Length: 199
Image 1 (cartoon, rainbow, N blue to C red):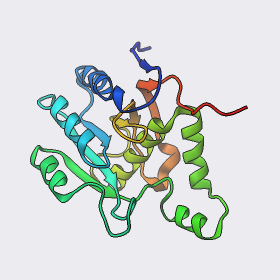
Image 2 (cartoon, rainbow, N blue to C red):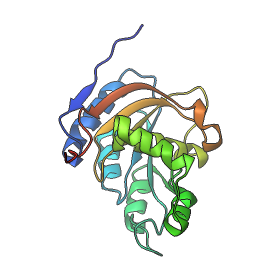
Image 3 (cartoon, rainbow, N blue to C red):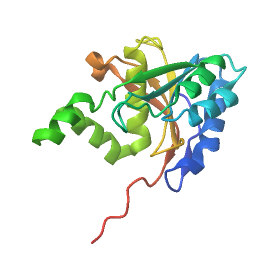
């Protein structure tokens, strides 16, 4: 049996970023984690993570969206931001969202739903957008060879829209082995993550 602490936030959002990174740093001090995966659209959250975790003996992998995710032909993370991150020792992964990808394009064009997007929506509804992001970016990093995969543990950091509000220790898996993925510890998470529904 193990005991640990979880940081609970009243609501999701960027305002939680510093406390998430503090929780991650505290967990890293136990000495068994060697890789941290962090979601970062523009690179800002990635830079904060790299600065906070510098000298702690972990490899930081910053996962960003594929070019064209926001606007056709454009990358949300600039080349300069990517160069700054790699210059600081991080690995940057640009990849298609594993829990949407081409399925979202099909749904936009002809309608319907997909099992992949159902998994994403279930994660989002049950645990919040940040947890869905943690799962997704870890698989994206594993599929790109940026982190080890198999019976190892890494920390994943995700958020809701921007910044970070969720962190967890996970057993990574590749997309084609999705059901080998495990969330083993929750380090930080919003207690409430849904928008209030109208009655």
